[in-house]
Image (cartoon, rainbow, N blue to C red; front, side, top):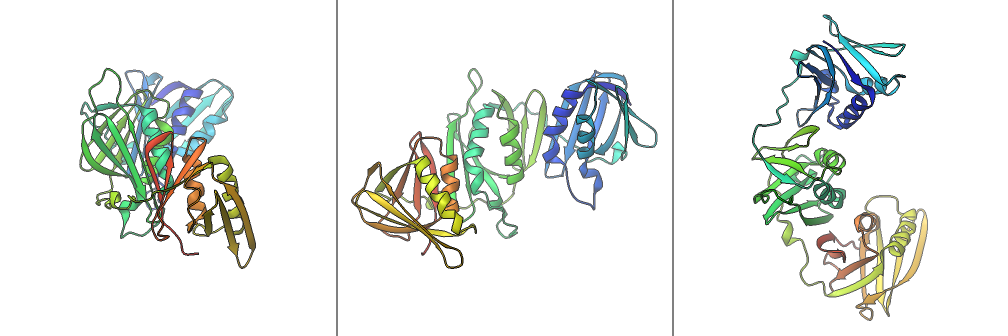
Length: 375
């Protein structure tokens, strides 16, 4: 194999695939990137951890077609340091990759390309989706995906993607302590409507990568079946193995009778809660909110560190209703960080054991639920 590629394009594609590299010492080839020089004048780059896979391509001046795999992270680090705008790649019979850029020469020992797992990007036509919309849906919901290693509930470690018809996509996630739901019109003008499909659970790692990679694309192509989700752009494709467990009945968690609505300046409340978190660093630390008289008193107490108490005025809403509730301070902060508007609406029930409902007035269809805490 011998070819010449532009360093900036090579580095950019290597950067995109870093999140798809495996880390298992039992199978070192999964930490490698597959480089395939094609006779059509392109270099294909593939990475996989067997759960999620990436395949991209860039233009190349191919002198001799061929393939090799080398460590993906080290290759990126080398390419970023090259002094010239181009790099020549040459593979040898003993699976060593030589790299020459300007007066700089480097090499990497590799593994034969025949040992690399097959990466398939499907042949179906698929349907069109606005990439920025899909990225936004994941941005609004990924904070409540469970990071637990509890193997009894793997469905909580992913985001639940649903097509409701009329090109409306909905994404839901929950870790058992909070739930987030966002939906948007995601259709592409001039393309067929997004077909309806029942919910599919996308692993957290795939959600994080998709959020980063598809945001800049006005349209992407998606193909989905029982076991896999495939996403394609003009530059790359991603194959994701779906989580094969049923997502919990999330609609039953969303409270229906939270009629006490309190409206706050989002940034002011967020700043207050961050101060509350200073004496409650653990994730489940709770704060007490005491509503009444057009304001709320918020108290955070830690017997080992100290106490913080502040009062905030309600902008409007059920200002005279007296109510005392408790919530995890960091769970509230997570919600306020993804709400985009200037205000936040907190909808509560008179019963302090009912979950709190947080609403973004700019996106009324979005729902954020936080389970209450005994304080």
